[in-house]
Image (cartoon, rainbow, N blue to C red; front, side, top):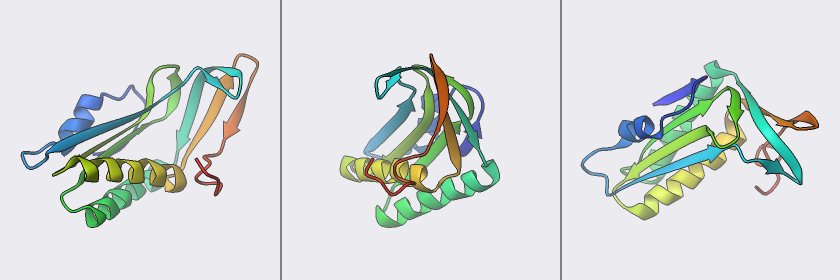
Length: 142
């Protein structure tokens, strides 16, 4: 499951895409909209994506994770449009035979997604808005 969606993400559906009897661990990461950034009150986020490039890149990240951590299955769903405070903009689920590989593959996946997948974020504040670049994409430490 690799999708760009405009509706709220159901983490249980994403988990179901990676679950299997050989998985000793199923790990879910949900990136949610927080209510503040650098002292400014955030009222929501707006995302845009180039889905025709984003989805294949998500699949490539999953293929890399599976090659690096045998037995890993990975699914990613990213939301576009308005994402209110408290709701998930991205859900990544990983299953693996053991928890260590699940944690490692999950961190790899979110870092690679932020660095490589063409998704753009606009933070909306009480007093204005700003397009934000991912620190990973800009070559900075996250």
